[in-house]
Image 1 (cartoon, rainbow over the protein chains, first blue to last red):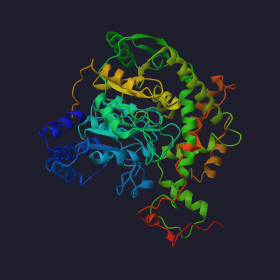
Image 2: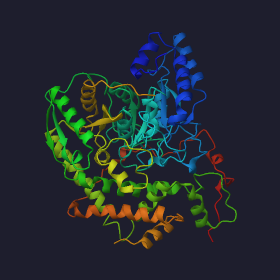
Image 3: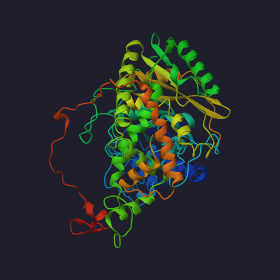
Image 4: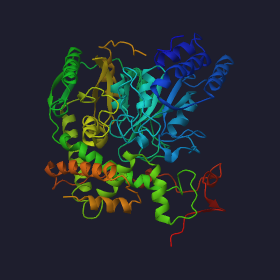
Length: 481
Length: 88
């Protein structure tokens, strides 16, 4: 059986009776058994997945109404709640936490008869960009298992890239969907802030994070967006997109569009291979009839510092609930004084989470807020203005998704500043709320490079059109695993 | 200039035990030093923009019964009370 098909191809095959959901999911679970010991994309595999797929086949056979996913096997990042299933955030702190409710994205996918094959590995509490900070061990890049797959939604991208599922959901706070998508040669989407409900996503930095699809094709991303996007009464930051069909007209091209090449994101510090790929991508976009020219967004230089200041502050607040009284693990209270109990309980957090909590306490604290947190918010405001100015001139912006090639596991883990800079090209979209997509573009030295396209707020449909156009110009080799 | 003592004090306030000085305090120090780049952003006159939401966008403030007894998920509780360690 061919597992190497897109989500839309899967739907067609099942709909036409050429494929049974049970057979496909069963084969997918076998694939996970065969390759995941090496890749570690999954923290848990759903033992009922095959049975659930079989129920969907029964519905199809009996002529009952079937949801648009037709039993499609999807992986879910382990910070998104699935009712009665473990949701650990790849943390020892939540090792035994069983979610009592479904996230809105999960309810919507269930209504459309998706099958969740498992929970995907990630950096602990989504803090990281290599998946090395998972408390359960790193995921590995299927293109070369000595290399990181990116993060924090590393398990999601690995599972899609290595055919362990058809599509996945991750979350993107500063590039956590796009970065692993680029490193693993999949599509990764960060929607306009508010397009997808965050209800049931375990909070890291609420003001900028979004759930986003990881898929094999741009059309698959549009397909998933049609299901999971839109207003949700449980999340009042959601926006009304009624009537949007992200698949409609997706092939209509970008002729006559104007594209700005962000100079600050392709200059010093960019790997020459990545720069060369970006130049090729620009040539291809021009070949499709778009006009490309250099664009400058000055505040980009300060965006990583602003991003880490803001996210640490929000994380410091969000993670305060892990005191082992409200959320936590089995650890008796006897013999402890209140503060020492919480300090002791928090030793279950991994080092990166602890560092960001300390940062999150420090940067907004009395005496330091003016220098760090408030200045970061001002950078965010100015960056947003610059972006809105840029979109008066351009339809899209383009840059490499990540300025460097995937690197070896362990190579940067002890250097926080080197890791900060890997996020350099992705955080801008989170700080300003704009939609961004990473499109697989080329393979260099056996490692993938993705190209990032960005559009103005609420221009998701148009952005997907541009991504589809770029995607149509490339033919990539198959993952060697 | 931020001192490591200041970082340790904040960690204590956050109820975090920094038993490994190099792993936590030194690395956090390095991160905070990087944030000094914000000083050259020239944003002192910039206004902080906040997004406002109309009250109408909030759902009705009413109790929605949950099908499960959530307190059963806690390890330390008695009746309807969460059991915490002594504060004094």
